[in-house]
Figure 1 (cartoon, rainbow, N blue to C red):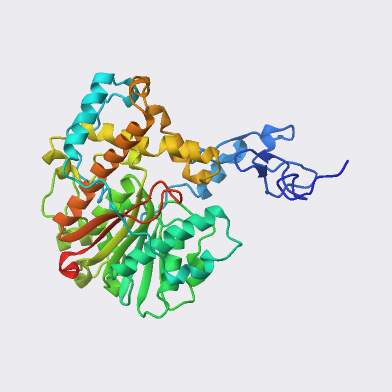
Figure 2: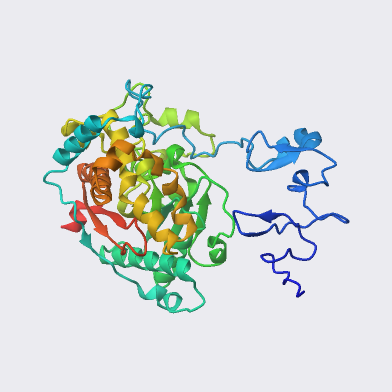
Length: 458
């Protein structure tokens, strides 16, 4: 019988763990101890576990030897670390209102047919007069021509490259790519969007990148640019707590800001919009639970280390030159963070309706995503979030409404939520639009939110 190749997929690699990781469809690649066949992480699942392993209390995604727990907690990467100077608790969270949380919120699956019909009726009335069919702007950029024609890139990589190329093409059309500015990539992940923007602007001077990501990320591409003229700086912080006016790099450079994001998930889009336009002090209204929009100089100096903020730098306010954000995961939006509350309230809608439409928005993609993924049309990472939401389609609706109508309702929910964001941007002096920046066979989440100052657009 012919032996299987030790490639880590058909058989474990030499000297590596023999535990098969079903989710990754390969064997574990961790190095094992002498005389062992399983690594420490997986030994407890076999017969080699001489010491008991338990989930880490700080992050149950990894395990630790029980007798070494105290030592591990002192160095665990998930332990609470000192807060950076730009961390301000809930500065971009939005006001905490009396109607939150919705303790008695009824799941969509528990709604009756009459209740769902009423919600859908109110939805269609709310979007009446709003353009639900966006203009298609599927563009490209020469910076990605070589990568797009490289046969070594698989289908998944090719789809991501097409989206990045169109994002850059749209930004170029809006005049957002250029010298003397700082690009802030929200939800940066590995930083690939910033990488391609850097490639596209190699001839431009004084261009810098700030990458915001709340989690620690492996295989970051921004490390490749540390010796370049452009500065790449990464902030590991939740957007909800990020005050841009306190970032030392921004205070030093004082450059105009362009906000970008590729598939900025759910509430992260609203947090990013607040971070760019509200936390800097451009809003004047303050609530008892809302962070002050315009902090006095002595307050800022009291909250931060004395050496962090100089007297002149405290009063510096970021200037936003534009933004381009690819939207996704509307089912993960939250009413408190949502920037379009005024837009909803003008249509007689509130937190209860938002909670329903936020969940119903997944009807636009779930059925299509599951059907297409069974044919291999979409990579695994694009289906995970949506699959978690498929159970929200109640039996009462499935029996009386076609899949096409449910998809249409889901799209209207997305339209309503997205136009609330457009309304917010226009209220802050920006010309904002929604476009289809890629085709649905590349990504079901194919809507791009753009904005430039109204004076620049005119």
